[in-house]
Length: 170
Image (cartoon, rainbow, N blue to C red):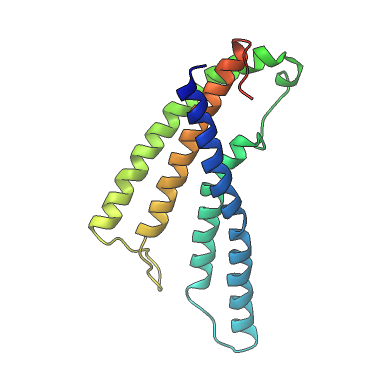
């Protein structure tokens, strides 16, 4: 593989590792928000109107920002009825084929995310709830997460292509 591709794969791996490890800690934020909400409601008899939405948005950030790291670690769900029996070169070749479809899907998803984010920013879009938080921040996180997954899939495509050719990237 050309050095530029090796550099790209390493940079994307490093970026998704850093973002993914940050995202792992968001589960503690979710737990803290929900614990505070439960204590507020039961002990102080003061229910919070924002806690569930903050927890939902944090959960969305958790799985969207962790998607690239999950792909990097190969910890996503795979139906490997036949896959586990194939040689590493065959697996890599078929992963290249499926990566092309996934890249196409992610490009469309990213386009929709950018469009939705622009709309939210331009019109100060708010959620339809009592609290009515602005939606732009979570849409920005969503678009960034989709972009990171797209970058990681392209890096995995390069890695699989090299493996299919018999020269895996370390």
